[in-house]
Image 1 (cartoon, one colour):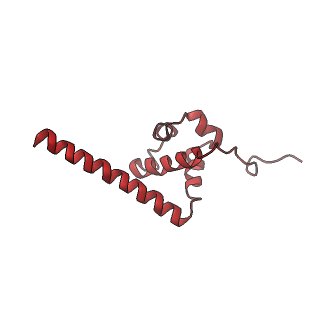
Image 2 (image 1 turned 135 degrees about the vertical axis):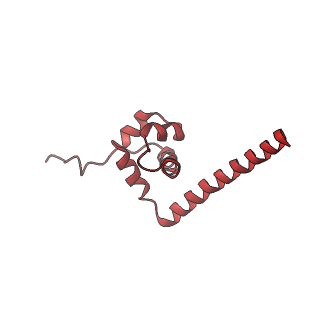
Length: 102
């Protein structure tokens, strides 16, 4: 029996890397939007190679669809961490600016 491409499971990325890549995808979509999202931008944000991404996801649509597989609670926690990260970086930037220009 021949297995169709739609039914075939894509290979998983090892360990916690898949979660890190999906987190990076959420961050890039939040920053750039879906239209400007590229596999290259996600790879850079996740500190992964594009080959690693393409081994698991053949298109950016597949990648984004997998981020939607998070439960609502997981998504809220991820976005909260992302917001805290931006907030921390903004606070550090403001403090640094104040020291440099104060």
